[in-house]
Image 1: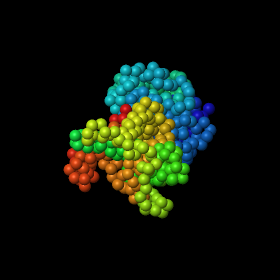
Image 2: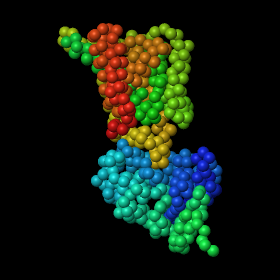
Image 3: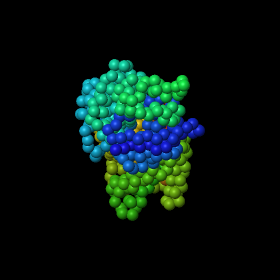
Image 4: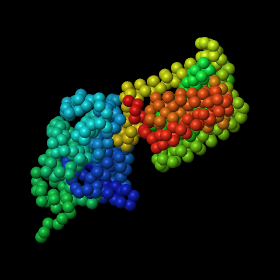
Length: 236
Length: 292
């Protein structure tokens, strides 16, 4: 069953077209990795799905309803949560406050402050610390936890490993694996190809705003992905 | 003894300035809007209170409680109609929009109420004039004490709201990063509207005190705005408590200045403001950051 569908999406920054007619469908419970070089339009696509960027054309359909015009905060209550690039925590709020502001007053679900702290045990001692004073890995954990607080049906993760030490990235992905195991639907942007192929069931590769390769992670060999990633043609 | 009395009166006066400045500080802290119509909104609140007193004969304090919901709704609507649109157009547009709003309010008041000077002092009861002589040369006015207590309650409850309630955290989160706030499901429009509603309500409280302790006319707003603005800047644009202390510092400077020469009072306040501005030049930190 398709949960999230992107149909012929066009995104622009002024004259620059960042996303060109991208169509994508993500089924319930799927984990899809979005890969591509810098400037391929991955972040813009994620932001358009989350409602932070108003698309120029095309549609975003979530659970059968057209949400192309819905503001970002409405989409959160529908069940779309984005962990934005660069984390974007509220620096002056404590860890717990960062989590609490993201919990809608009504919606109930598996995720609350307690269960987020259980999945990210490194945050437990930092609970009452101001987010600005956390390390990069801790901040990333808060950013993911904050997105989980809305009990999303789709979790969008934009470069969660950016700027983190490899050992911290491992810890973050171990926690993510728990989240994915519980049947969450995830769309993630990841620069590390090996990691992307390992964690995701399906891989979508973007180049210059277009989807150039799409397939099951198990069926794609590295060379094909690398060629698509850099826009190289296979020698005849 | 005169000096101590002057300082005491300055603290009372400063509490009044702090209440006037509070809403200005909130709007700057949450939305980065410098509301040039803030003084006029305070005066508008005084006029609404005045109208209720005039028609019903109730005490100014009761009338204010009736005027308060009107001002809250006004603040809400003002944000959703005028300010939100101006915010989208860049950082200078809200300045122009509130400047225009200031002129509109002044002229509407002039049109409706004539340029006559009004006061709420007569309708506030014994508070306006009664005072206690503590020792010879040291007197505590009832109104001064009321203003100080109310100022402490206003700032204290705002502090509690921002640091202890979820709605307060949401407001601080939106102030720090409105885009990220949207992405975690916060409707920044309604947060902004709430902030403006609170600011306008507290401005009206300032207007009430203005009307009780002295007089007002349709053109009184800009002067009050200058005092409020000075209080915010002296307080370091850093925190709510900074604004309270800034207001009190301004009040004390004015009453001490009056000791030198009665005409030097307002000037002494301006000089303090200019000194702080020069010493801390460039130090405009985010207002709500320290309100944890």
